[in-house]
Amino acid sequence: RMERTRLLSDPTHPLLWVVLDEGALRRVTGGREVMAEALRHIAALMRRSRVIVQVLPFEAGAHAAMQGALKLMEFEDAPPLVYFEGVGTGRLEDDPATVRRRRHTYELLAACALSPYKSLALIEAMAQDYAHEEHP
Image 1 (cartoon, rainbow, N blue to C red):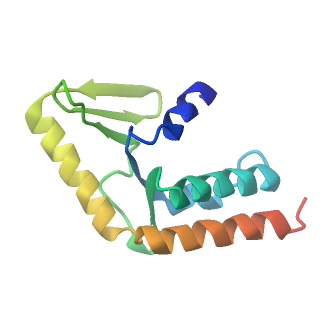
Image 2: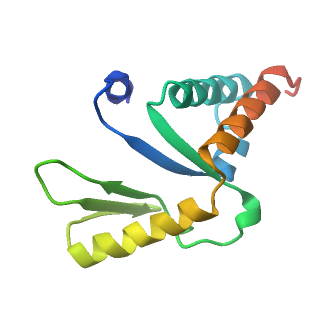
């Protein structure tokens, strides 16, 4: 994982655009200090224009990607791919119709999510909260 993070240091590629469920920000994993550091790291990447992050708020309700993660991949020298996964399973697809349907799903998620600007504000506020809360 650490090696893959170096990819985001390259100013020319790749572009990473993420719609992140609010639950991923609020579900404490690894402790509050770890959460604060992770959110500060995401915010720093956003501020350096290395990633675009949109938070899908709880208030958006049920959505088309609740069953698992969805990854769309585009390449300069190959057709687009989609990878989707659920508990204990994952599937890579190159079928153009499947890729189009999953892209539409992603576009709907992005339309329901907070703007990148509002997402950054929320992520930074939550990082502060995690860093300063005194919970066991």
